[in-house]
Image 1 (cartoon, helix red, strand yellow):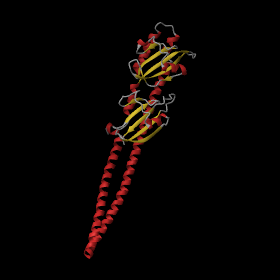
Image 2: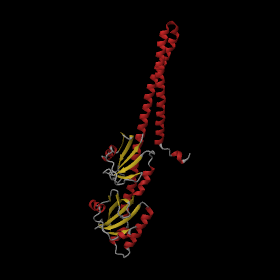
Image 3: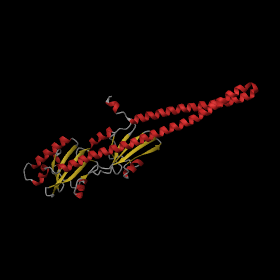
Image 4: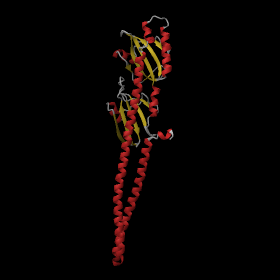
Length: 333
């Protein structure tokens, strides 16, 4: 069996099932119309037979049997219509549950990915070559750290850059952008947050002025072996790698997927458009997710037709508590 056969889109299958249901419904409607015409024909036949008197008695029996057949046909079409409507409803429910599952799976994968980034920053902050920026007097200590940071960027690939800062927020080492060395970041929100919590701090998605790239900053204290604060280690996650998760989400060709932050702003979507600009908090599904509902779906009817919205709120993963982000998946039933 080929790989393509193993990755059949269930949304397409459900759509085909519903199309088949609609075609079946059209057939049932045709039968209903024929039954109604047959019933009318039997009535007219009975009237004509009555007018014919004795000569029409035999035809009256035939007309009565036609009427019985028409009555049974109408009853059967009503029952068939109920069955078809039930299948249609169940197909919508299956699609809705699957849509919510995709949202849940997507935000879970993002959480697991960012948990690893959370671990990276804390682990690297403990490297001797990082701590030596402050605990050593070797003249080449900063260049050694720069080389280490560059090697980590190259190996892990998912980072735009890595920085070491002193306690006042001045960058003393960088993996990629050496022109930033010596610049002070004390007024940046990500640095203030890390300093305030005195532990690892994770920023929301933002557009970095360096390279004009969307990123998430992980910033944590660098401590000596005795626990004294030496400085801060800060990473810049390349947000483009989140799209590996978004693009692999199993949604239909008419569906869409969005990751929103706690204020409702889109921070990822398949089109890559409207990032940090479009806001979806007007959607009921978004509001439910933003309130913290872990998982669910709703049906929406508007002038554009029917839609299903599945949603899931971040649960975090292990030590990574998440950023109160949510995933929304829309499908057209």
